[in-house]
Amino acid sequence: MKRRFFPFDKNYLLENAQMELKDSLLNQMVEIVKDIYLLRYNPLGLKDKSIEKILTTTDFNLEDLSTFYDELAGFYRYKYSSNQLELIFDGRDHQAKYKDDWTETLRKWIIDFSKSKHFLKAVLETAIFYPDDKQSQLAYSRLKNYMTDHFGIKIYKHKGIVPMKIA
Image (cartoon, rainbow, N blue to C red):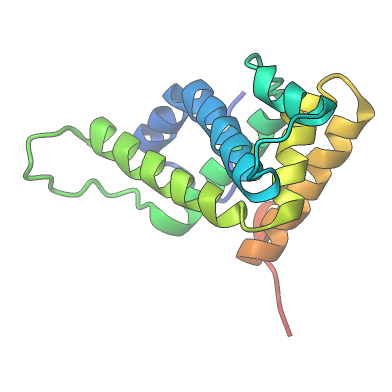
């Protein structure tokens, strides 16, 4: 079931491009977070149990991160897309352009989000440390709260994307 995040969420080409890239971008997101975490909080490369787990885990739990990805994709469509196709003069089709634009934007967002220690810890807890635990769901809730604070939007289950009124 596809979820509409706002009334005019009808850029189906962009949405399909985002969904085709979902698995690879989620894995890239966890890898980026791992690298940034290790560079920032373990620059000497010292190994303990938690660092060893981060380094050796290659099969990530992406279930809760998948929902986070869907919400980021919906926000991207809300903020940056149009239902009108643009003229592209470089020989690419719209699907390829949307894939490139979405990949670039998501990478920038992840690097920007990674400035926060709370974001890094939430992603690592969700994907590596507590994959089948309630802790993973709590970490996902922290990711949603981080997105709300960062973008000034809130995503409700039945209302979709609602801009926050900030005083």
